[in-house]
Structures are given as C-alpha cells and as structure tokens.
Amino acid sequence: MRKRISAILTIFMIFGLVLTGCAAGAETDMKNSGTEIVLQIGNPNMTVNGAEKAIDSEGTAPLIVNERTLLPIRAVIEEIGGEVGWNGETSEVTLTYGNDEIKLEIGSTEAYLNGKKADLDTAPAIIGGRTMLPIRFIAESFKFEVKWDGETQKITVSNKVDSADSAIASEDKKEAGGKKSAVIYFSCTNNTKRLAEKIATATDSDIFEIVPKQPYTDEDIDYNSDCRANREQNDDLARPEILTVFDNLAEYDTVYLGYPIWWGTMPKIINTFLETYDLSGKTIMPFCTSGSSGISTSVKAIKAYLPDVKEGMRGTSSTTEEEIKTWIENSK
Image (cartoon, rainbow, N blue to C red; front, side):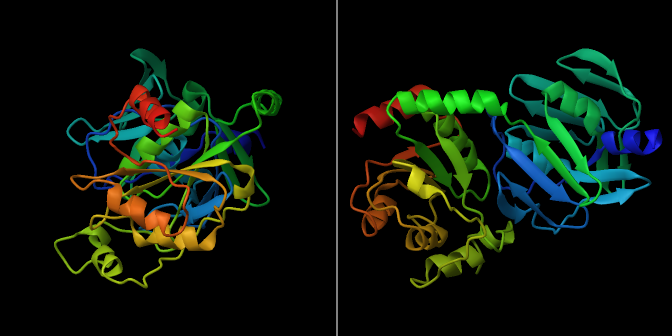
C-alpha cells in the first residue's frame, strides 16, 4: 500500500516537445490563481474550472506505466499560468510559474528551484519521445495541490485559494457594490490568453476561455494556404462549435471579450458565442491581439449584436496593467 501511494504521489508529466501555438518569445504570465484542472486516465480531454477542452491537438491522454501516472505537463502548467521551456542541446527543462523557476535535466536527480539545488528521488527521463518529470517536487515548489482518485482514475491539479478566503473575498466584493466582471476570451496561439490573464488581474475579474469543439491546429491557421481559418472567415454563415458551457453569465455586469484578429475582424467563433449567450444589459469591453489590423471593424461587428459596447483595445503580451487601466478609464 505504501508503495502504491508513493507511486501515485510521485506523478510524472508528459511534456510535448513541439509548441502547439505559433507565438514565440512570450514573457512569464502572472499566477492564474483559482485554476483547477481535472484529467483522467485514457481521456484526451480535461476540464479547466469545469469547462471541458482537449488536452492538445494530438489527442494526448494521461496513462499509467509501471504504477506511475503520466500527465501532459504543458497543458497543466500553461493553463495554471506558467510556462514550459526545453533546451535540446542540454536536455534541460525549465518550468516558470509567477516568480519561481524550476530547472531539471534528463537523467539527473539534481533539480534547481530559483537557483537552489534540490535532490529528486527519481531522475527525469525521456520515454517514447516524451519527457517525464516528477510532479511532487514541482507541486511543492509551486505550491500546487495534487489529488488522485483511484476509483475514477482522475488527477486534480489546482492552485485554488482556500474556500474561506474565497468567501471573504466574495463578501468584500459585495460590500464594494456587488458588481462582478468576467474576462471571456478565445485564443489560438496563447497571445490573447496572456493578455486576457493580465486584464483579469488588473480588473479583479473571473476568467473563462472560449474553447472550440474542434481545436485549431497550426495548419488550420496557416493563412498562406486554403486553411480552415481562411474558409471560415470567408463564409458569412460559418459558426464553429464551442465546447465550453457558460452557465453563470447572468452574474456578471461587465464582460471583457477578447480574441485575435483574423482577416481584419473577430474569428467566427466569437459570432457563435454572441449568438449562443444573452449578454444584453451588460457592459461589453472588447480587446484583441493582432499583428497589424486594428480592432474597430470587430467592434462594429459586435455592436450588431449588442449596442452597449465600449471602445476596444488592441494589445499584446507586453501590454502593461497601467495601459489596461487607462483603456478602462477612457471607456467610461
């Protein structure tokens, strides 16, 4: 029994060596506090704060090998608000979360947390082209909570705040006026996700992701080809299905709606969202990420659904909290 518990707690994570997004050089995100991720052995989908989504575009699923649970690390770390780096020359993995950094090397039981050496009971290894990492050390270093349910074979990873603290924060918000805001975003390459997380932090908003039922691959957004994104943007009737279910939007007075700019406007999945959910009576604050195009055309498109739409903001992963607050203040 002791061996089984030890094996379960020394969970390993699968790290996809190929980035699933197309953006590079992103800066470290703030901690995405309050995230709970549930994965299940053999299931290629996971739930993030109750919303189901694919782990990756390759259909990767957690599995058990030699009494050890193998988990996709990139999906977990990035969903919680961290970053994963890989150096093929040195066989070194770097995990970054908030102000903390972990470095591990394949085949070595030496790890480093913020430059301080630590000893692992199991050395990271590459098995079947995937890098296996010990989650006990990672969880303790980043202060994540990891739970294993043997009956359902589910793994829960979270950085959720204590329920009592959450209740106090909720009560404080009510005393401050009772108004709530939500950041709702669609992101394909994580650029919009990073901006959305900054806006959520700056505005003390809850945050939700619009997850497509059919995930977008790199080929789907290769604009130099007859790709899926091109076909959808050229089809006025295209409405990509959404996997996420939003069942509590009535609680929010303000919605910060984010998306990348595709063909000069918002992706058609935003049309799907606006036609599926009733946002009438809410203040809508659009924001976007874009290589060149502005946000005005997409704001006009949103106004066709909702009249109370404020001035939009085109931002990047480098947008500062001060710039976000200036945008909000100028929109009043």
